[in-house]
Image 1 (cartoon, rainbow, N blue to C red):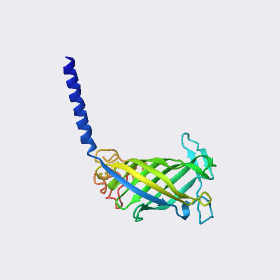
Image 2: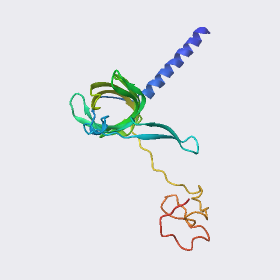
Image 3: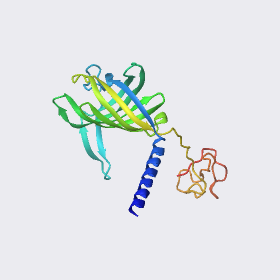
Image 4: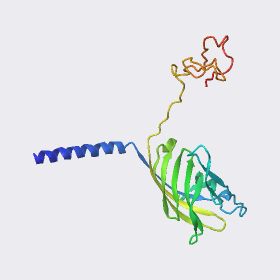
Length: 238
């Protein structure tokens, strides 16, 4: 009996392994080795080497009254930085995103530690990266992608190649390893017949009380007693 149980468990384990392998085949591994260069608008110091800095006020929407969550004169946004293949130095894309302060100035490095959300834009798609931007080397999560990089998930390992804490100029290497799903597209959405207010139950208080969308989203349906003639404008419901 014990031997039979072991055989059943082994067979179940093999089935699980086989199933996992089949799922894994749906993903494709992608490797990229890139270098990012700062441009004038991503340098930290305003007015120095054409530096540019943007300030934000973060608002909490947890209550009807807006509450100031945090105001920081050091929070800055990133403009577009150039991405190159680190081996061929061919320009392959751009990086754009935003960073927020997470700690005070690190006196040892001269930099603020940041939380960043940014996107690498390539000719065949994009990948989204997010995480705490610590003193490098550091890993940042790859949390999504589009087109050729649909559903991208993985790691971007970053390391500082050069940096100037006075001007904010930097050069960073990115060693990327991530997995993508097969490319797919989703259909456009349209209003369906039979779902209010598309079924003709118009609202008399609406700015367009005698119009409702048809299934195609382009033809109007007149409500009885409220539409003496076919509307001459695009259908709309509120």
